[in-house]
Length: 256
Image (cartoon, rainbow, N blue to C red; front, side, top):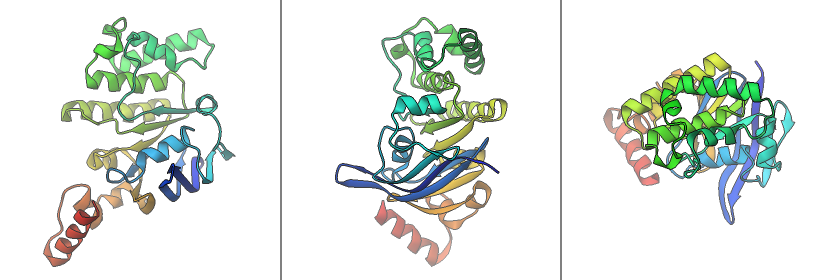
């Protein structure tokens, strides 16, 4: 099975603060992989390092075997990586359609762009209805739909998704995750998903990594991760019975 994206011993920092400490992970082509962790664990930093927003101090980031660390974000988008950032970050004064076309700025195939616009409107019909409306006037859920669609307009081989359910209602969260699965299955797009909603992430992804204080501390299939006591207790809210479970729960609360 081919690894389309690989990180090897990556270390990234914000000034003097080290956020990633020797992170190694791989993403198989055509799969959904998730990274779980508490706030501040370094999940978003992984995505920013991959997309060129942050240059790692050490380690390698590879796309289809080619090292891409140190490349500009523009180059990385052109190489096939799309990034759906935390907090949506749409262009609020541009129309919905212009936001989408911004996602296709690297392309010069007008017919293909038109076809992809129709495709994202099929995923999110509300965006077609609001095509001429300023993006800043959309609801939070609609802006998330727009951010995902904008990334799709670059025709990425790999999509980095940072907290797509952040601030959304349970109903909208379910809809967004259903679309993520459709994008993966219908378009063959590989997805690296960072998500606080561990229940949903483990449900749709195949492989999961658990990040603590900038280090990968656990990796397994999502099916097996969902059965592990630590994951059930700390991320799914299912406390283990007995003294041992209580002791581990207290330790985790102190760490947080």
